[in-house]
Length: 87
Image (cartoon, rainbow, N blue to C red; front, side, top):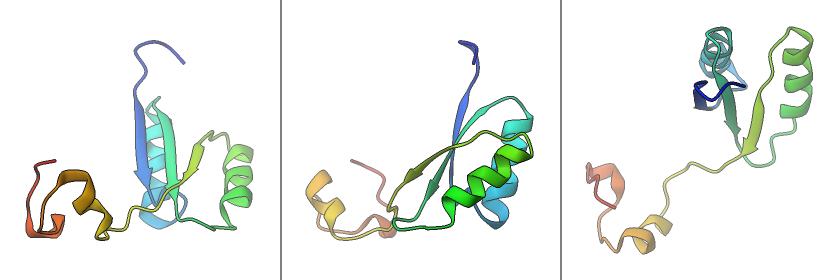
């Protein structure tokens, strides 16, 4: 990896459209991190399959669902889904 290489984070990067985007970013020379759901048992076999095809991805288990927990982080009383972007 060069100091000018960019890294992309792709949520759902191990399936469907996310996987296609992850491969395209890899093909363009970017480092790619794929985020997958907690407990995903398919990520290991998927990474091995991708490696066999020349793709190297770093994978992290991440829960990106929106819950009431975010209110503690920003001290707001309305959910992010209302369009508020301040943190």
